[in-house]
Image (cartoon, rainbow, N blue to C red):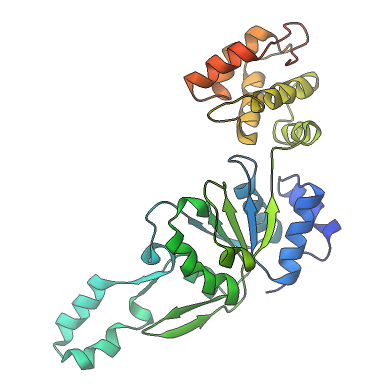
Length: 292
């Protein structure tokens, strides 16, 4: 794997230029994963920027981004590869040969359909492989991943072992809804990303929504932080903070009053029960717009 970054200090400005503001921990983890050639396992709440980090690494390095979105029931045919059975059947029917003679003809590259893992392994140009929300998949998928994450290769019984032409930069994300296997974790470096500090989130909002009134930046991120401390079904993500900033710009808001906050809570909270909790537990100062 060719190295994307020369130092930790190089990571931060390049990711920032790609639209991602990393903490020192994030920049260090990205550099080490790149330098050591190890997959990077990132855990943390939904919406803290795990997927966006993979996108930013790809953008900062002009690499291809290959994404495997995990879900319950995903199998080898969707993750690794499968055979084009319709095309194989057509060839068998057309040739009218004995099966023993035809078998070697239909299990070739011509009939192989590469899915994300195999596609990333075979890509000759720099590639970022994102295995997104692995905790949503069945544990059996982790077994399929071990060869890819450990040796950067895929074994295809009919063709043999396909080894990476150029090792991809691998990022595995998890919302920690279930524990991942120790075998998988051994093959990865580990990074936990939590919700950002007030200062970092304010900087993110300033970068993503520069037209927002500067006086609103700090009070709005403090209100979002206060909401995250409540026992909500779904806490506001960073993306929703950005959406809220865009909402305030669209409304021409100059003062973050309690009325403005209550009328726009639907941008941040997506369950009625969460709205009730926020109304009961969060006191808003109408003049200063601070959460208490």
